[in-house]
Image (cartoon, rainbow, N blue to C red):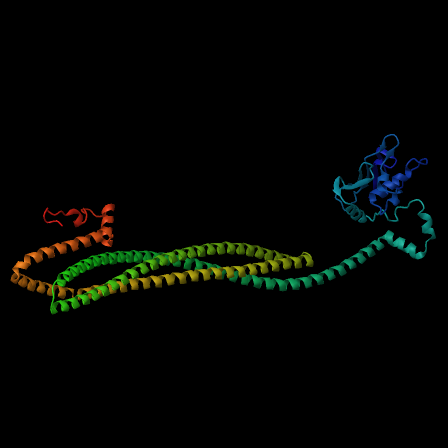
Length: 548
């Protein structure tokens, strides 16, 4: 192996491209001062990569670029060493090895630069240059290159310094440096290995803890899903049950309203019958007032007792009316409570939907935490990364897990609140059911009371009084036969009086707006009842001579 040629372009005093051929063996370059002889050695040193620009007699690397007073400084420069490598001393599979260093100036003043390295035209680095040349024991700082002023110091130096030079020339110094460097690297590697073992132990502990937390989180997530499914199923069953109960309430309400209508109708019929009986009793009282004797006193007392019984019946009927009105108001309140329970159930459904959305968010964040745990596990298995960075990531993961736990706790609280609202709605619904059942019982009792009142009314002495009155009438007819002269006058007066009383009461009933009369007229006006033409007193006529 030998240096075959040197190719320069814009290097120091060599403007443009210059090729300097070199032969095998000893060569000498001669020329006048300033012809560039020393620049050839500087070019060799520059390509080999000296530690300082001063080794190539320059203050800065940009000073190596060719500069002409007329054209100014060039933009770049190149220096190439061409080695004959047929003996393969250089570890490069080529008969010729070209080492090129390219410097390109940049900036307006061309004070800055960029260096490029090439081996046989392929991009490389200075370290690769040094490694390649070191195989052939070639170095810019080696003693195989003797510059001006280097001979005198060698002659004047001591034995130890001369020994170091010989060691450097023979490669022993480089070998010692490599050994020292290897020792330092070994110590550093052992230190790093100890730190890695410590970190691995800590991460293994953290990983075990994280795996346990992950298992607990998965277990909790599964339990949460089962609980949500159970709540959803329970909610559906409750909704179906409430719907059935609501339909039952509506059916019972319709039945109760029908019962109320029947009771009202029966009450009106009883009122009409009561009014007729009262009229009959009043007529008999008027007729009896014209009589005298102990029989009159007895009949009078019986009539008073009948009035008391009728008053009792009237009070019972009034109580029935009050109970019916109270039940109607109570049924209205039950309807309002049912509506409130329905709204509460809807709110519970909305709360359950919100909880499901939040649970999906928790599952998503939990999946992210699991992914982060897996990534840390991979890093621990690869023994890579820095301890500080991984500890930070572990802390972030723990913070995320704590946040997920807190959020899960909040969701449990929200679920408990929603369950409490649902329980309250169910309790209110149960109370409404009890109240409706009580209303049914009261209506039944009202019906029983009504039946009892009818029984009392049926068992009253009105019929007995009627029979006695007819008996008295027979006796009166006997007396009338005996008093034939007075009978005709009395009967006329009595008939006239009874007619006047009947007409007066009929007029009072019409003008006073009796309940039955008014309802009949209202039904006639609305078209609900047909065939009603008016009151008898309004439609009947009396022939002339018989009117009053």
